[in-house]
Image 1 (cartoon, one colour):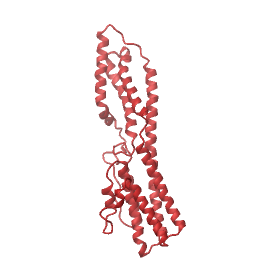
Image 2 (cartoon, one colour; image 1 turned 30 degrees about the vertical axis):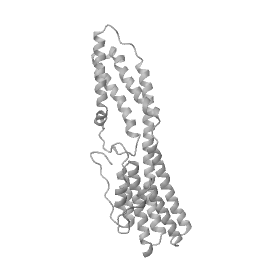
Image 3 (tube, one colour; image 1 turned 180 degrees about the vertical axis):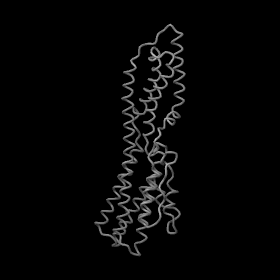
Image 4 (cartoon, helix red, strand yellow; image 1 turned 90 degrees about the vertical axis):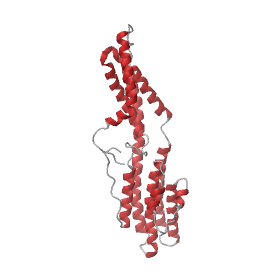
Amino acid sequence: MIVGRAPRIRQSFQTAWRTLIALFFWDLAVTIFYFISPFKAPALPLTIFGTALALVLGFRVNSAYQRWWEGRILWGAMVNVSRSWARAVMNFIPDRAETAELRQTLVERHIAYVQALRCQLRRIDPAPDVRRVLAGPEIPEEIPELGRRNPANGLLDGSGRRIEQARADGWIDSIQQTQIERLLVDMSNAQGGMERIKNTPLPAQYRSFPKFFTRLFCILLPIGLVETLGIATPVGSAVAGFMYLAVLQIGDDLVDPFGNDVHDLPLDSITTTIEADMCDTLGREGPPPVQPVDGVLW
């Protein structure tokens, strides 16, 4: 996620420079043809075309931003429920010698859970982060949850089974178990919302039609402007075209908030914050906060 104050116009230009170069040469060709040809450029209703295209692009950008912002809300809920989880585990399960391992394991498994969820959303292997968190002599080399199709959900299931065993052993009562289970349900709901965003792209009309209309508008733009701008048509048309292409690119940048791009949510920073909070609960030193790199928070 970009946190710097400077606008990233350069990045937008780097993304669309090929299209802009092609557009500039097309504008140049239209301008030359206008001056050497006896035919006059038709009067195109560019205002109507531009207004209609702006509405289409506006709907697309708003839809993409809603996905981005909903993803941030879900991760914010995950941060809150994580703190509640650690507090419930440490307060409900009695602090005795025989329960110390369970209390520590449940908090560590939650750290592994959020790290695994981050990796799954970014389509990378969660095994290294899960093994890093759950490393220890009592942890087998092959963690069973990593063999499941959804390792993050497997870690939640395992934690739920350990809570049930704690109730069966008399360490917590059924009311406390219900309250802790409610936190697991909140985590599952947040994870389901994230997976829904990740696995459900925008409808094909939102992805294909705006691109087609924008390119068509850029092609028609110099034909409608050459009568007014004359030899300045290539510059004016290219600048106007870049504005529409930049808005189109904004939608592409925000449509997948859980990717690993500069415009996506800072999942590394969020999960590191959760891990640090969990380590504080266990009385150990947590990882330092993730710092922005070149104005980008990952």
